Length: 101
View 1 (tube, one colour):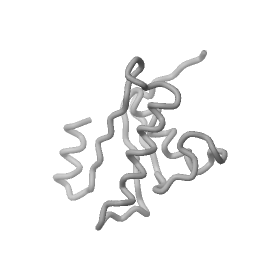
View 2: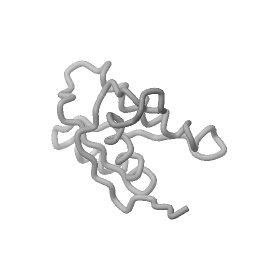
View 3: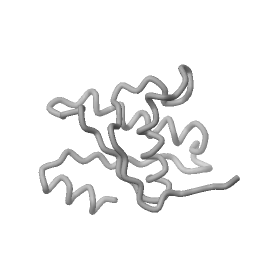
View 4: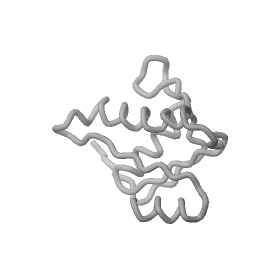
């Protein structure tokens, strides 16, 4: 996603490329989701951004997490990621990870 972020920035868009902890590094539930929520909410402290249109774009697990980030306003109080400081208004998920378990 580094190249996609660079292309978006070159076209004049603010691009924020998030990473998250993997399994074995504190990731999984809820660590990975805390990382994504914290990364999105960090945008609230950045001057000059139009936060009325925040779009998540991700591939594979990142695509799935982008969809989750967009769903945060609907999470119950107290759930990891609930009450977002910044709302993702749209998400593009490229080949999202999927589990039937």
